[in-house]
Length: 320
Length: 320
Image (cartoon, rainbow over all chains, first blue to last red; front, side, top):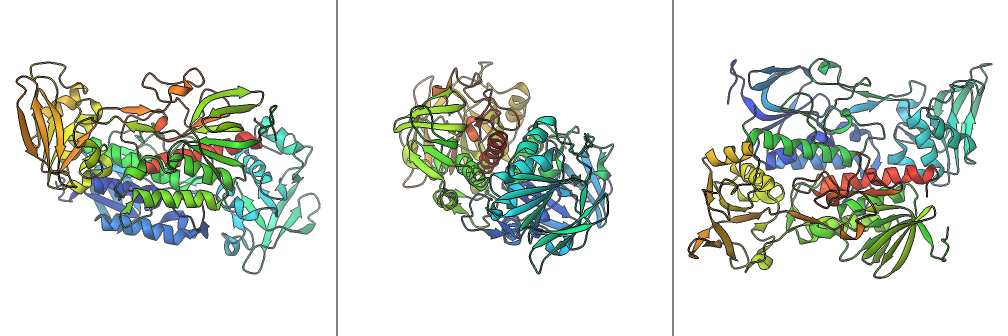
């Protein structure tokens, strides 16, 4: 099938090559759909930055994020998925097809699976880049277990941060929660009152009020954090084995506003079958609402599978 | 924590040891919850009966269902999950805890994850048992790809059967659909009209009206099916490489009626976070509504992960 301007149309165009996009490709190819993945960075997504994965089902021994994603990529390639390095810039319908422009050409497809992910917002302080994945983590569900009976630090006092602090009380010896407002400020902890109360009275949680992280320190592995008191500017160095940062996510959807329905927080809205507000456009993985908690590779993969099964139905039934 | 009658209470009791239950255990243990799995048959669930799995993400080469499940079991065991062979018979609340009686003792837990699965209803005809997984499949999404350009047979003319028949038109050379009612019967095909029309006019689909499968034949691998015409009792033998049976699912929930909310079709109702109608009771995998289409291991696993994350929150926040 070719479009009006002679570009070959695929059955499915998948945008994003993380666990959601690659699993979508595996399922789409096994449904014999002509499948193309666009990825702007490296095939594998955020998991490439993950040191060790212990919770992806099927791997009894911890596996590096890189190796897990290499395996998924090989699986998609073995099934003849086409992969293109390109960043999608616009999505629009053209007749029965969808047209995607990118930094590397135009693509036409009968349906599109949006799997562009969401990056956790990162702290821009000294040492944060170097120690990421080496004691500094953006996901307690993923990495918390590595800190059994150790002191850890949590940055973030919204629902997600306090939830993860409470989660860590089951694992860690002590959980320090850095709050950038003074204790007297009733809005210092933004989490819902029930979470706030539980955290405030928890014997393992210690709040460090009116402070911010100035630096992460350690020689190849996090050893301490430097905290700065906002009232007097004084710095203290606190020894911790792990630090978790939970200050929000940034879904990669700015290019999709006005095309599909997007939540106030920037996530793509879908139904339980990953269908967006537009027929033939599906979304899967961290970019999709409901997100709300720590993004997990196996969940993203499952959503990719469901989106591809729906895409196969859509195409079989004559859509696009 | 011990209950009134001296039985040690776990944090989480997971009922069912398939992909959903084992992944729930992996996540629960990494949240440092004391975790027990009850399984009535063999740890691994339905996938143990699956010859080769090609679509579980992370495995570029096809892997046997047995090996995949052995790996998940080893992963749960490495994280110190307790496993008990027992069939749960009742679930009831007792104070802040949940109490499960089984064929092998009583278990108490702060929360429960129901992951008992759903078995596809099987055809009870000659050869069906022997050739299951050897040409006779209960899931086209899973196994369809192995029959590229081959003739296949579909049994089942409801939504699921017709959807899978349409799905198979993209892969197979020809798709025979066996219908047990005569063509003149307007209800012969129970699928929704739009699916029915598409199937009726599809060039690759051939309906075999007023017939039933009498036997599956083949020497270690399906070679043909014997069809019986209901009007005159005559039999014909049709050569096919694959046969798919889609005549419904039987979720394992009869023991749960009146305890948690269950749909008319017998599936457990949950919200998107796998919470059932009862606080502290979660459901994951094929036993959970919405099901509606071919159960996939990666989807069950993801639901197990979500249920366990919710269970960890429930326990951290003082539930149970």
